[in-house]
Image (cartoon, rainbow, N blue to C red; front, side):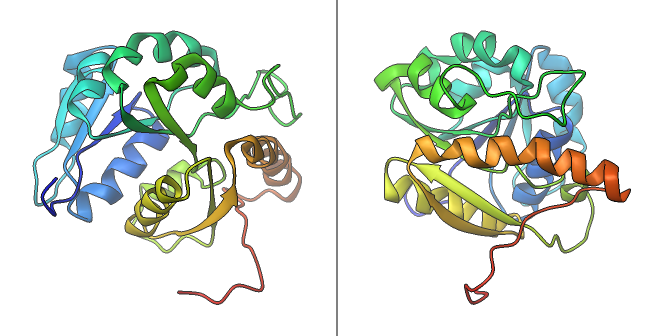
Length: 219
C-alpha cells in the first residue's frame, strides 16, 4: 500500500448499506470498488460516487479480487452463495462482514444461525483463506447516505486486535466512532441487537435508532 489508503471492495455494494458506506469512504479519499451480481449495475452505481479517486464497478468476484479490504454487505439469504463466489479472491485479505441474520417476515425477532452469528459462519465458510471482522450492524444505512452526523457507535469484533483497529479506522472515516467489541464470537450480540432496534423503530416510530456506549470519552 506504500502509505496510500487501501482499496475497499464492497460486495453487494449497490444496496443501501453498501452505497452508504461507499459514499462516505469515497469522500474520505479511499479507492472504492462496488461489487454486484451485475457489473453494469455496479458501474452505474459507482458513477454516482464523487471523490478524489474515481470509484469502479465490477461483478462481485472481480471486485473481491481487486479490493485490498473486502466488505460484505449482502442480505443473509445470499450470504453463503456470495461467500462461495468470492472465497478464492479474498485469500489473505481482511473481510469485514456486516451481515445480520434477518429472516423475513419476522425481522424484529432475533433468529440466529446455527453458528450463533453470520460472521462466525463466514469465517467457517472461508476457513483460513481470510480474516473476518464483523462491524456496521447497527448503523442506519439511509443515514449513511446523507450529509449528517450519526449518533451511533460501531462495535467491531474480530480475533486479531490489529484487524479490529483497521476497521475502527474505517468507522472513523465514515464519521462514526468504532469501539473494540472483542473476539468474533461476540458478534452474536450486535447481530441480535439489530432485530431489537428494528422493533424499537416500529414501537417508537423513529427512523434508524442506533446504539451509543456511555462512559468512554469521545475522541
